[in-house]
Amino acid sequence: MTSRNALLYAGLALGALITLVPFLLGLMTSFTSARQFNTGAPLSFPAPPTLANYAALGDAGFGRALVVTALVTATVLLGQLTFSVLAAYAFARLSFPGRDALFWVYLATLMVPATVTVVPLYLMMAEAGLRNTFWALVLPFLFGSPYAIFLLREHFRTIPADLINAARLDGATTLDVLVHVVVPASRPILATLAMITVVSQWNNFMWPLVITSGPRWQVLTVATAGLQSRYDAQWTVVMAATTVAIVPLLVLFVVLGRHLVRSIVVTGLK
Image 1 (cartoon, rainbow, N blue to C red):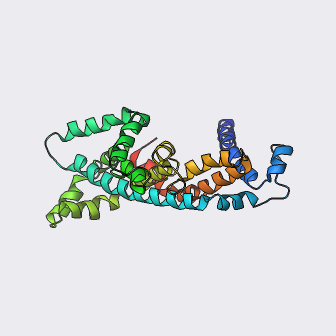
Image 2 (cartoon, rainbow, N blue to C red):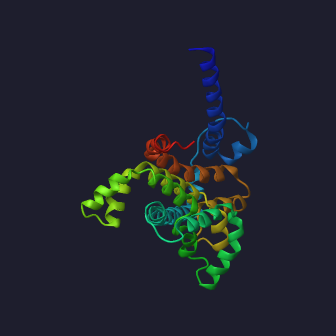
Image 3 (cartoon, rainbow, N blue to C red):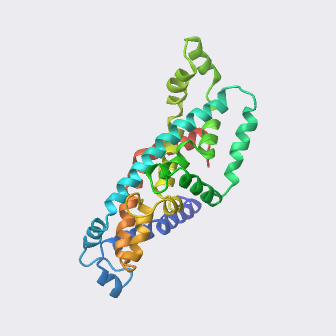
């Protein structure tokens, strides 16, 4: 191993250590008693490990927030994939007046901060009588997003036209081409989009905080923030809640990680 490679691996190891240590400390804290956390050394191991912090989550109704978050995320994911694929294919392969102009105008909304739309969205949901409901949580994110449509459009344009034309010669309709040709050829990029959507929705905080009240439709992020005041800033309980929230994302990455790497190779994303 050359000195250059040794320095490269040392830098990567240092970066990995800096990234992982906070998660490891959070995991240790979640198994630490409140008394040891307040009186012991900050980096000491739990002695002995305790599940009391996780039991406190059950008493606080954290399980309901987990179910609500999973339901919201699954619904948004289904809507995002469905409508983004349809819109991206239309912008990439179908010809209609004003297609490019409409696409670039829609894409320009990426420049608008999400906080700008919070008040208008809230007023719309309140006028429709949807405040503090499941649909208020999902409707603003259900029908695709500029980033998702842009990502899929650019990928769909790389699919060989001969492949699509061959399917049409066999009598395939536009929907047949989309379902049986385009989507199977786009699995890596769709998996990447699925991961991005799940992570963004799972960690969404501002909109659920604004549009919901009470425990009925409370999501994980809002419930975790509420634990800080409910348990008088007992960070051991908060770290237990954070650990529970992270585990599903880690499982998702393990399942779809290879598709993410493949999409980077195929599309040249960096």
